[in-house]
Image 1 (tube, one colour):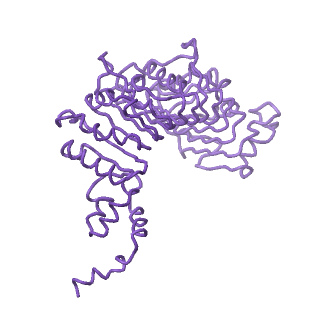
Image 2 (spheres, helix red, strand yellow):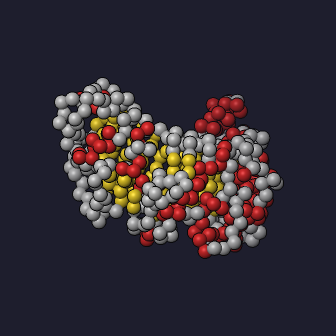
Image 3 (spheres, helix red, strand yellow):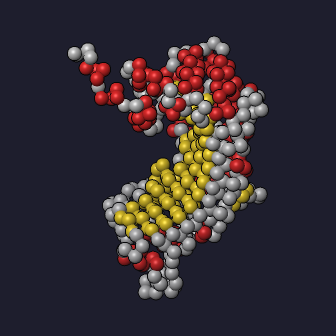
Length: 431
């Protein structure tokens, strides 16, 4: 009876269709690595019935992740990819492939791409990590005409240009592979060299979302990096949302030359509507916008990686190496914003009023300051008509001595979020 008992388990009475639904619910939400310890490979090891159901369920295999660094040989990696593509049937494929530095030491490097190429026409989501020069070289040799991506919609490309040594003037071939992707609308570029995007040819004019990430490893390259980013979003004529992340390694985390307001005589124009910035390079954050016109920008979000001084008044001067000079941007950028988020910034009481005056059309305003404010000493969130501060900002100001005018300060304000520490965080000029 003990031997027969498992055969009479209620789960064996479930039809294959219901088992497929249950199996899909067991898949990890983020990491879809092909490992024997996680679904879907784990489901194939329980019993023959489960194995048959899992193998014949394309939705279990059409979105997978393969980390080549955890696979002993390229041949094993190829086997996993061939198995996933075969079991995915005719469904669109999502692939996350992490390459590693030993790619060229595994004997026939093009073997991996030879396996991927026949299924390129089915890829809907593609994420590639390019760490070695040989892996990039093999990708660059692939012709868009022979390896078209007609269904590709989302692309994530991490290219370690530092290892590929673009900055040494080597004859590096451009990457044309993704030009033949008529449905591509969302791209994430994670680069390690300021001019790396110049070697990656993309259909920028059809992009709706662009996530641009750069980790600076070359000193004194901030200005060049900003120009390359501006060129990218200027080519994306239909761009709606953009994210920009500028970080710096510790050995080059020092103040670097940045653009000045009048340095670029021919400004570039971008129609992006939403822009989120994470900036971690010492200098003026506002240099990102110098030489760039954003006529349709309505939503701006800025997140500092350390306390960032915000300068609004004309007579104020930067007292820190990491600052955001808003003065040149008040009439061209901030005046028309409808949503503004400033996180981990340093702004004092005498600058707050000037900042509010610079955003008269704002509807949603979120400020997380690292400096103590006399208005609000505890983290609070203010909704429309629910607080004295919100009413103060949205009714005519006539009695306050600090404001000598009888009009609305923020007449369109709908949501206000202010977060301040209980005590002032000390910040010196050498921060």
